[in-house]
Amino acid sequence: MNKLFSPRVLRLVKSVTSSPQPPVLFMGGNISFISRLNHNEPPPGSAPGCCPEIVKKARESPEKMNDAEWRQFLSSVQYQVTRRHATERAWSGKYNEDKGEAGVYTCVCCGTELFPTKTKFDSGSGWPSFYDTQKTETGDNITRKVDSSLWMSRTEVLCSRCNAHLGHVFDDGPRPTGLRYCINSAVLNYEEKKE
Image 1 (cartoon, rainbow, N blue to C red):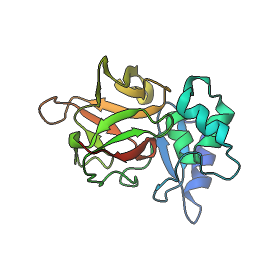
Image 2 (spheres, rainbow, N blue to C red):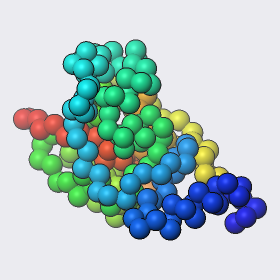
Image 3 (cartoon, rainbow, N blue to C red):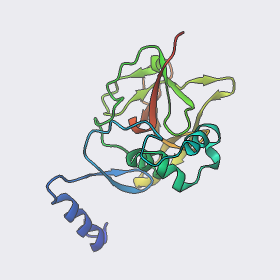
Image 4 (cartoon, helix red, strand yellow):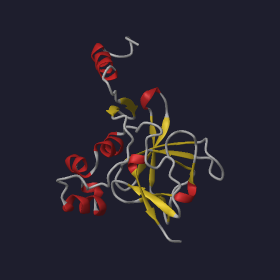
């Protein structure tokens, strides 16, 4: 282990893991430390001091948001996952066991429709899983790209409107697609829809 990590990193890990309530290490494109508490995140824009103009800008033109505005608009966990490519701890997310009625899961950053509830299934992974995306006239609202972090190659999925990191997609899902979109709860909002 000493050959993989610098002495500084080893001291940091030792100090973090010896605290009374240690955080858990989450890995995405970057290594991040996030609380071990259950992440039932507040609605975006509800933090004290978040002005209505930022909420409007995030919903109407998210491509114009800067890093400081995302920090103000999102909770700490939402920011780390969506903007810094972190991963929430398995089994800790609000939507992991959610069995929403007819509706859609939207992007916590910009409100774009991502996954219909009818495609959600229990993969046993500890994160919300979907076998398909919300369809649009042009396909869907997901961007897929190769993620070579953590010494492996995976397919990362991002919101195509605001570029928020959502999770990853794997080819071990159920029929009819055979795909498993493994998504962080912190990046989702649920909206009920009447069909």
